[in-house]
Image (cartoon, rainbow, N blue to C red; front, side, top):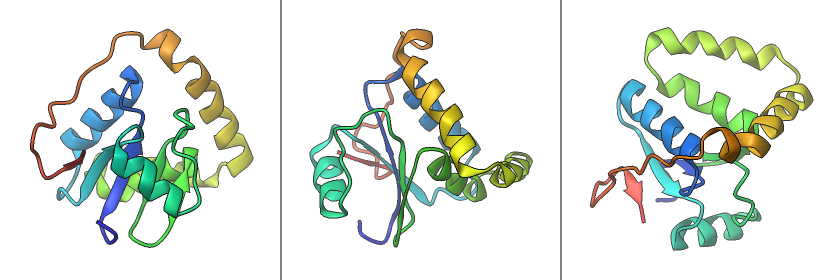
Length: 130
């Protein structure tokens, strides 16, 4: 798992579940794996890397070498998506402090706006880490 590109998300968040479903539908070549922050693997992995997995309002992306969080994590995933979505790479021009300010606003209100949770059907899939 150390070399995989891993998306860490809040497994109890409707918005986060929808984002994972969006990525699965629009991914170019199925190179990403997904892990809920609440999972044993997620907690231990992020702890070993010096991050706090109990901060469920933070989205993380591990590219096999580095961990990115918040808006930078989201932007790191764009190259994995199909061509039409790659236009979103333009958001890199927005300063990080501003991107993260917007990210924090959405993160704070996400459970208010997305009360219903979309459970992911991860079963025994190799795309999800339990």
